[in-house]
Length: 89
Picture (cartoon, rainbow, N blue to C red):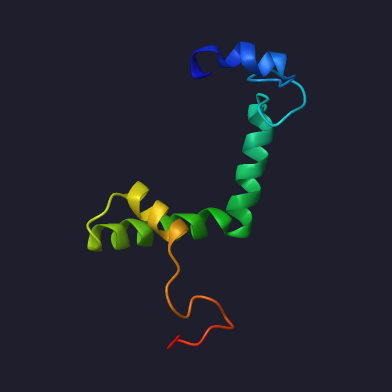
């Protein structure tokens, strides 16, 4: 599919990499710039950079790449992770 993605997406009605509607459309640069400005103003950019910095640090401590650590955090829950879960369960 990857070799023929434009053809496959076209058959499915996706607007891959082109102007218009759809999740796979090309998003105009001015719209992306506006979103970036909103993220910068609200502190979201700084927050995600902080999460990434500490994730890299923790991945290094665990002897993992950032990608491996990301997969690990997605697939594993530590005890006490959920608010209604006792630490000793």
